[in-house]
Length: 475
Ligand code: GLC
Image 1 (cartoon, rainbow, N blue to C red):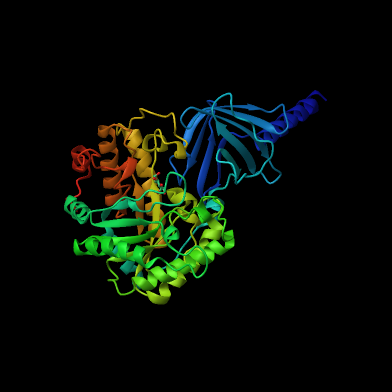
Image 2 (image 1 turned 90 degrees about the horizontal axis):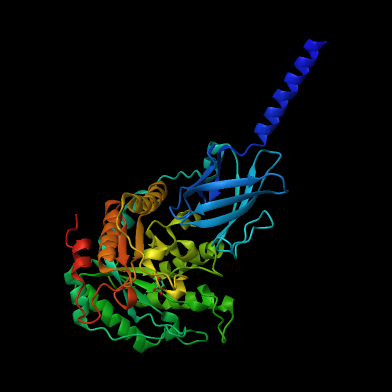
């Protein structure tokens, strides 16, 4: 009898412990974030690692505490990603998946999420559905395609872009208050850009400000002449030119257009590209590139962007079968959103473009539009850890490029001039070199305004920055 009792108790204990382990959070979980692998590791020492394959910014280690006496279970993170707090809820489902919804923010000012769902409007909330089976997760994003021979052309064109600069502040002034400005550009300035060692320019143009505001949206011929002159001087100085459609506030900045509807603005964008492509069709295919829309974001999410870009590519191809098109990643051109792109399988003359400004608070310190007002004196010292973050992000883009057989361009990178010259030089030199090593072409942001690398008093290049960028060494 005593023996039976003992066995019974033993069985209960074993069952109890196996039930507990089924509900245990400890160990590794896998899921997707930005269509890339996400690993969440609950360590025995009450620390948690979140590792996003796509982004250094979303990868961190911190302390965690779980409260299992409430339903749903609560999790508190401390010291997450730059000292933030993270409040969340979690549940383990029947099929052994773990759902986690976390809200990040300043300690004491962050609210815990109330439901298990992604909130597309929130910049601070993350929702993850995770499981124990890594291979299964990887299977969801596995991609395999054989590149046709014609894919080589876009790589050659990307090499031609090399290390370039954005020509901003010349014709990109838009209708936003404070952004109306444009300033004249002397031919000598273009010559100086070429002499400094840049190989190409990304020409930031606000076309929508210079066309009829209602159909047929004809672009002002005098504006075309102004743009043409600059393009011609660039070509004469051996600078390849990427013609960008920069600010389009009615499509991707939530700005209301009082004359035509949101939908009609897509018709206008097509009409603009029909004219731009037609206008430049006889310019050399290996020197003129088209960049159909800067930083799709806000209302223009990834699904709509994929549809829009396919349509814009078709429009451009009607008059330009052989020009290279630079297609931007969704969500402001982030590097970590690259896997959302859905490119046409029958068009290989495409370069994928992303923008890189990490760490954001260093590159945008003090800028209100970038939610960094009041932030100052942020240094970038070039420590191994700081460098590793950038390498990780560029490695992700490179791996995507290799599996998708599409060359990539870093169409903007830069650091605002409120950072010290020494830190800017270190950072810009390192980012450019890291891109070059990976065959990523680039365009520094920018020629003018607060990211400029010329001294505003003398108009001369800032020597420390030019030296760090080492533009003339093209190897
Ligand atoms: C984007 C914006 C531009 C801004 C730059 C750096 O290109 O369009 O206005 O200056 O990023 O933040």
